[in-house]
Length: 146
Image 1 (cartoon, rainbow, N blue to C red):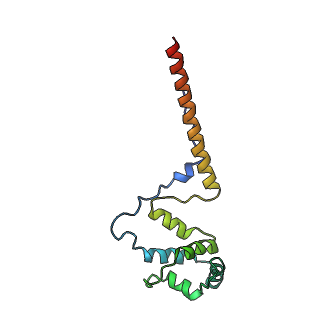
Image 2 (tube, one colour; image 1 turned 60 degrees about the horizontal axis):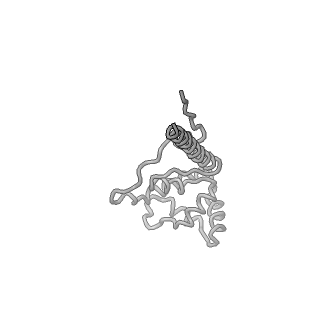
């Protein structure tokens, strides 16, 4: 009896599967969600400090006032550009907006060790499948020689 090995390396990556990609009309009208996510990520941070860190990364001024506008759900006209969203995640030390974007396209963000674990698990599954196919091929070759 062959007992399949359980892949313990990638289990945590799939504990919570991402939602299906946004596809309904208007499903990407998520300005208020972005503002809320940014506001939550800023809890415990000094907004002046985050704005200063964000300004250094793209090389242009991002003021506390702009940060406040990005986090105000009522400010429909203030959506952070992509490079500003990346700077926000780096400045806060979180992956708030990157994770949010990944969920919108039906993906899950894996960073650092989690990404390495996922890649290792993928390669081990490929190896195991190749080993299985090699054994089947060898058996078929032996059977054809009889």
